[in-house]
Image 1 (tube, rainbow, N blue to C red):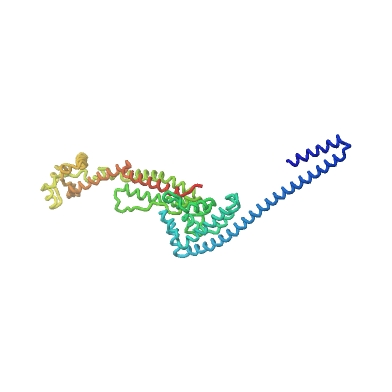
Image 2: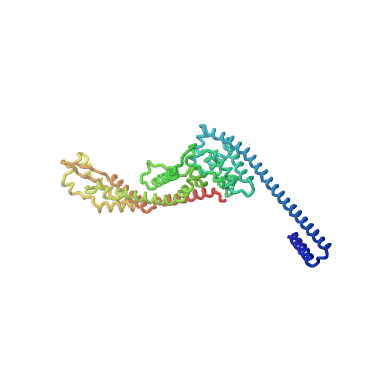
Length: 433
């Protein structure tokens, strides 16, 4: 701008000289020379400035080219190392030992234990380290101001080389990043994997398959298996007879856990199931209790449980009548008709005394019934009657406990807390940006 202003001033003076000093040729000549000199100087300055800018641009371009070449050179070297280590891992997983370990990991429900299994592994750890350094190189040393999408051109090439079972192992290896409420060294690894969408095509639920297809119902299958085990354990709580029941493991395994932590084709479904499992427990246990009470309602009704006693005649067990009956299992018809009959009043009184535990006032009677044309006698003892009444009261108490949800209240609360803790422990391992 200074050059242009000076040039305007000189041209202005030159023009004035032409108009006002027509006889002063020397002055005009001086102005012409001055003007030309100024123009030459200005042009030289512009040329110098442009030359400097070109030099700077050339230098920047050279630096970028050099950095890119260095990046590509290092990337190529790391990629070759990755391929070598990946080949070792695949050979291991194709062998009996590797297949067994992979299967065990897919069944493991202890997250920390699964994570620790891969730490320091003689075959798998070297590969995990090379992969980490390769991804870190892409992220840190690609050209300045490069977008994540541009970097993915290189990370996607790496990912395309890794088969599904290895991707699962990579996910497990980087899934436990918060220990003792602090982020461990694997946090950086997980962030790189997430930034590069490394598991966008991973099928964790089919980890044992080298080349699996997407099973859209894989989450529901895994989830329903857990819910089924929960229902079985709940059944143990509400069942009257637990003799043939046994507790089952009701826990999610590693494919579900890593599916909740990393973005993958079934991530949203996994989270939805995890977030809804407490409601599933509430609904399924309530329905189970309602069905159970309906199914066994008859076990708590005295006229059904004690039906065999209604209409029987009774007498004191110490009476000589018992020995007379047992001699030929017959009884005189008139004697039989003279004996009192078991009815609602008798049973209700007995049950009330039994509930009050007034065992000293309970009658000790024999209960008989005649049958056949010869009036043969069938006899039941006081012990039989007492046992059946105890069984009736026990069933009534049990059904009332199930119907009021007293039977499974503690179980439900414990399970709700357990699943709340599980959800928190899983999601806290999913690092934010």
